[in-house]
Image 1 (tube, rainbow, N blue to C red):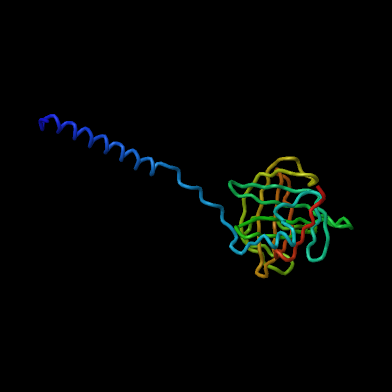
Image 2 (image 1 turned 90 degrees about the vertical axis):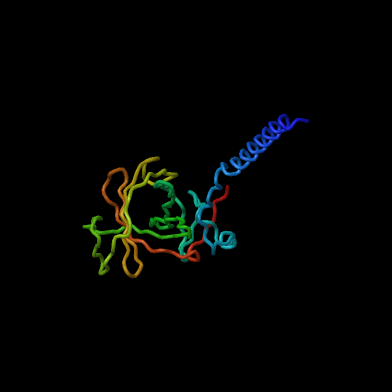
Length: 204
């Protein structure tokens, strides 16, 4: 066969092979990057949830025991700020005393009990430091979020909330929340360990 006939055929074959290889390489590199998994608590185990119940699944009607004191979940606020989500559960005991239990992951599970601050002239958020009850509270974070209300919370089904959180050197928390533009509601808080809380889910 004449070289002038073979040569064009060889060139065409090489071009086709090059195009196929290039297409395969592009396909491998054009795939979407795998989604990054959410941060996980490296010390979390299913054993604690099995033994003590899972605070992340709390709902109205459940019983919560905090350091030996039993409360019923009356209602829940599901809050979100951008991609961040957390919950605040309204609890009351047999005497009608009400407290709030906040539940969030950062990525560790963070639990805190909040009690309304009974003060004739409560402080107002804004300053970098607040003096209260012999403690100095320093500003930690502030912002605004949307909320969805479940069961009994005393709030509308949906709305917005502004918040401002403070903390003292001994770990005592001071929080302020303003729902849908209402007055600031101050609460004193205390962080709880996973072992302080036990959950008894209501019957389905």
